[in-house]
Length: 337
Image (cartoon, rainbow, N blue to C red; front, top):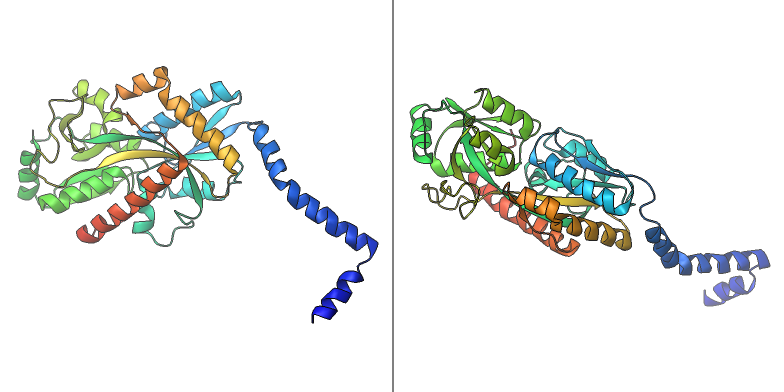
């Protein structure tokens, strides 16, 4: 066998030998080509997919960060809203995009839970995406229409128990923070309330303001203007501590529901396989954007808690969230209805 291989090697024609040398040269030059590609990045507009309709916290954050990135990178950063299927439509679009840094996505809580509710997603949550940066988290707030006859969580529980199935809670889609909070509320409080899913929190807020649903666990960022205007009634926040925006509001834990901790988190993602040098550029720009006083101070005043950090930190956080909610979903029997 070895003799046969040896004879074949010696019998290479000159053109074949030249091709072999060129192939080896091309392989050796691949890192150089990758560096050159990163050096020219970006040379055209960057697209940020927002997998929900305009108007909610995901959209607001993407537009704020995208604006700063555009200013620093010198290219347009375009927002493309791709709502539907609890963010799965926009997320699938990201998975099918070229891993060249020109298409990224503002993911949120549902990115960790979609696979837990639906094992037949058209993508793999851990294999098909590369976290760029853990952007921030926002506590949620339990709000109701002003006319609802409950002024505290305890009164809301009593009302729900007096009318089994008579109250409803809205969410921006199955697996999102509002849905997880609503199902956790049902489980811990032992009440029967109906889930009404929407294609994003924007439409859910509209129907809550119109009195079509009884309650909503919304990001404090988008609810605070309506709360201050008296168009929503706030009962509690969902973090482990009170929010500086609404220090008068108790937490759900203080309201008698131990173990109730839910926050809405946000993470920028790219398709898997993105070159490390381009990933680093995007990570740097996102970290710079969230530390910019014009963005940081403005959104921090609306309840945003900034995070940032490396792609590795974002990846570890995502995996930990999937493990945590996997346990909760199993214990509560939550369904993606």
